[in-house]
Every structure is written in C-alpha cells, then in structure tokens.
Length: 226
Image 1: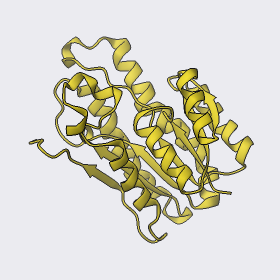
Image 2 (image 1 turned 180 degrees about the horizontal axis):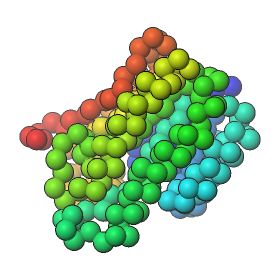
Image 3 (image 1 turned 135 degrees about the vertical axis):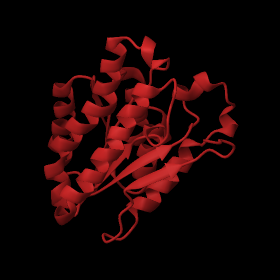
C-alpha cells in the first residue's frame, strides 16, 4: 500500500497534488489548519484528515505520527502548507515575519525530519512547495521569498545527505498559480498557471526511474518578464 502525506492539502496546489496522488494509487493523509475544508477534501479523497496548526512544531511532529500510525510507512511527502504576507520589508511586523518563518520553513523542516525514517524505508520522494519568489528578487514579498529560497537550499542539501538512502527531493518553484493566495494580484485566473499544471509536472517527476532526480522545478507564467 503506497501512502502520501500532504500538508496544506485542503486547498490550492496541495489539494491538486493530493488528487493526483490518489489517482496514482496512494492512500492519503491531509493536514491543514481549518477543519471544515480539510474534512471536505478528506471526504472527497477517502483520506485521513489531521487538523493541525503547523506553526507549532509539536503539531508538525503529531501529523507525521498520525500518518505513520494509520499507514505504517510513507512513500511521498508533500510540504505544501504556506503563507505569504505582502508589503514592504521595512513595514513587516515581527509577528508577520515569525509566522512566515514558522509555517513556510520550520514546519517543512520538522515534518521532513520526522518523515525521514519512513521515507528511507520506502526510498520515497519529497515534494517541497517553494516558489519562483525563492529564485528571483521579490520586492513586496521579501520574507516570503526568503523562506522559499531556504526551502530550495534544504532540498539541495537533502538530496546530497540522503542519496545513499534512495530518497529524492524536488523543490517546486512556480510563478503565480490560480489559487486563493494569488487573488491579490488582480490577474484573471485563466492567465495564471493552473494547479493542474503543477500536479502534472509532479506526476512526471514521481514516475521517473530511481536513478533520475529533479532537484528544482521552475514553472514560469507566460507573459512574465523578470
């Protein structure tokens, strides 16, 4: 029985990846903060729902433990939970900086660390939701971009540290994707990258032979000029 844990799995890219993983035959655990959309998504996919505040490190540990208790292993980990708080860096409040560091970075680190024994046993794969904001200057999203750059860095380091165990990690770095998080851009949804685009690319990565690894996947939006 193949299984996958998806944080931030109740909406947006996380939900699209969860749907794709279900199509590929994985049993699922979905972890997210808001119980109602989480239960709805879990019901659709026949998944284990774990409501958790991933800004709390203990909650991150619990999510992995509940997945392990249900399924006994893990083949794919998707770290999709994230938050972006826009505005000039000079005006960012400390609590806004801390929240982005906790959810975007620390949660991914703790969930990944706790999952490594399970992923080593399965020679599994890790999908880290980074962003194109982690690869280019991002005025107005400086802290968010910094957390995503750190995600790219840890992904590269994990690939070196865990090569002998067979674990492979990919940092997914899309530009604007049509989700609730990008409503503020004012761009029409049809002009943005679609969540299904991301899911199809991840599906391809997951189907590669054990000898192939994609450390970073950058998805540009047609029309952007960086």
